[in-house]
Image (cartoon, rainbow, N blue to C red):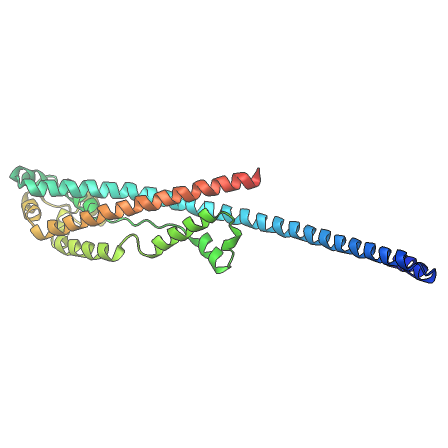
Length: 260
């Protein structure tokens, strides 16, 4: 093809047809430019297709992670609600100062053990961030075209890394509660647990610890502080869940648009 055009140019020059030569040369240049532009366009299409396929893979990976995060936070919220209800029940009994309550729990220590175990529990929400962290490490965050999604992801990770669970404060309160119950936790351990550990079952008639427990102002002061802390944590967990749901909704819409 190149030899063909070269022969035409040589013929026009030899025949001294300069005007036609220049017109032909210009036309040849235009054709070359058009060819280059077409090649560039094809290359751009290929690059766009590759980027789009890569974005789809990224969105699917994020979707998988956030589906797990959604379930984990929902489970934590459910567990935290149980903790709060048991804490509130303990505080109600403490405030009543009713000796009938003490007598009841002296003969139903399994119920007391159950209340204390759940009322002083702590559950942490653990979102999954592997896909996002890999995305940041690889410098591929800009492959996500939806700016709103990029911003929501950044906000979610920032909240998570800032310690939205307030773990340090929770651990300090749990330690104080443990210290207040250590001296009689063995006495109120359920008979089922004792048998499982090959310990003797307790003798109900030798126990009279419910009143001592329910009049322990220090324990219930710390339990009250823990309840405040847990309430705040639940609110933060709900906010995180809302962000997770928003992220999942956007990812779902993006995938539907790209795969349709």
